[in-house]
Image (cartoon, rainbow, N blue to C red; front, side):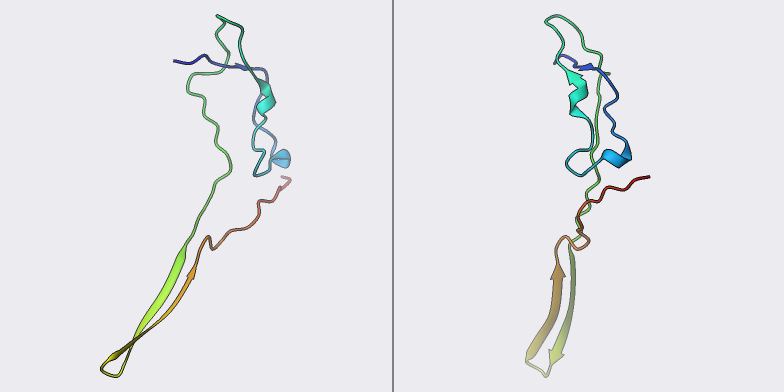
Length: 89
């Protein structure tokens, strides 16, 4: 079992300061002194921004005559990808 860290302030950033690469403030965490128990709650979990990864494929099979099959197909990967924007609420 590891040692809990010391939390010196609220790690959650205001929405106006959040970016995809900087979602919480890591500077509020410090290592405790030897033998000291930190102030972080047990099981602390921080979630970053959500990630959606949509891969889409559309296809249509055609029978041309008795011996020929044709396929029309289109695929996109990470279809709705867009750069993260900072919104001020």
